[in-house]
Amino acid sequence: MTEHPFAIAVAPNGARRTKADHPRLPISAAEIARDAAEALEAGAAMIHLHVRDREGRHTLDADLYREAVEAVRNAVGDDLVIQVTTEAVGRHEPHEQIAVIDALRPESVSIALREILPENGDERTVAALFERMERTGTLHQIIIYEAGELSRLKNLATRGVLPDEPLAVLAVLGRYFETGASDDEFDAFMAAGIENHRWMACAFGPRESEFMQRAAEAGGHARVGFENNLWLPGGTLAQSNAALVSAAATSAGIRGLAKADDLRRLWTEPAVGLGVETPTA
Image (tube, rainbow, N blue to C red; front, side, top):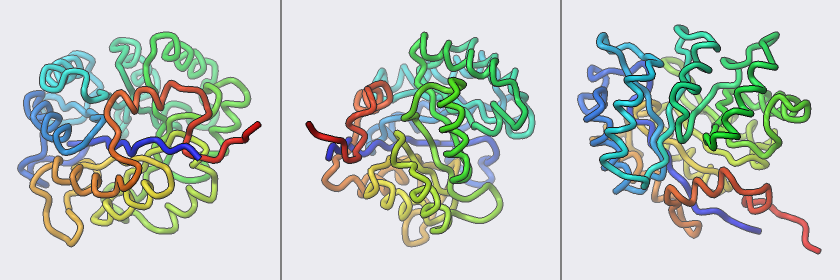
């Protein structure tokens, strides 16, 4: 049995919340860089970036991403994996999501499977995108919202639309402005075999830290932050994103906390060493 250290990603703002939700929610590049440095100090290995336009709306504007990435890199160097999002938020089409990836060639990117490749979507275009990311070394993470999407991932990988499994996957528990994360959702992901991937979980609502503990115990990793949750265990409003990272870091246990280079290695190494039992000679 091989265990990787426990990696924590911070998602400091998301696409929908504003300072009306929390005055410390970072919007500008400088504020995002501040939170990145604080999250690194608290134990994060990665930052998941959203950027906003002048009206405060979620955008996939490449120039705004470059500004934010530069600010974060100046603040933390290479000590955080910097991941941009392609989240559509009902505003952006797959061709726009692909265009921003090609324009940025980011270190890492998150892509929702159901957005980039809806049913009856263009598989050849998506296959070509993943081939380009493999060539340029972009660390891609596929977002799934329900356990049934794991079987679709397997089918797409088997047919060569996606790279071979295991894949870097983020399991989303709960939804914006709806229900928080549930035990049934977590159990369904585990039953569907998410442990066969390099997986993280994020959890909407005040049970975030509880589910990150369960992910740590199951060999997964964590994404926390104001994008998904504003509350510490016990119901206290978190003062900062770093406070949520610190709460998740208590789950590391004997695995220890991963640094950015640990996460980079995890997402690029061969299938063995995923924290699951492997055959011996």
